[in-house]
Length: 112
Length: 121
Image (cartoon, rainbow over all chains, first blue to last red; front, side, top):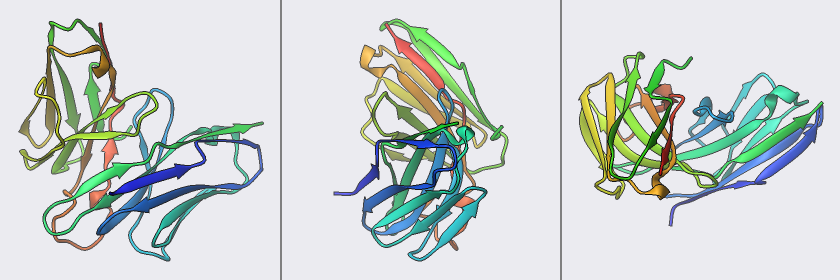
């Protein structure tokens, strides 16, 4: 069964305390893995797309990496404004069909 | 501002009402999506449209009826909903529909609207 699992469910950090969020997946025919940020009461905001194992993407304090089983979102020296829920989604499928599966998200709290 | 707008932003309806949610994208994208986000549950994909044709229906109850009159607009018609249908309904669009043979690119990335918060009494 295709599955996307994010851990931890919630993460509390002090400002400047670097850490990583995990997204592990079990799917057939990975097409891409997406990271989104979602603030309360708003729709998800796209961060990164990763397509193959070994790929890395960076944006400000965020860096996403991908292996054949999981992806990590590294947050370096976080600030309070980085507090949000981070969602991982996997697009999978072969031929003409596809599906997108979202993880439950990791709620990040960064304290000043 | 992602270029995807949704109206209304908030909606309260009774179980016997009929209402519609509207989504409009200003990005020139060809694919549009409806998602349901319930408290403490992952996002659930409901409907997918590509070039105004429905391409995926993930076992959604018939009380939800989508309509895509053109590539810029997407509607979700609601009737005889249940309290458990209360959720945040999100619309998204992407340049291309995943599954179309193409080079890997950002064209499959989905851009979300702000959502409609629905409460069914």
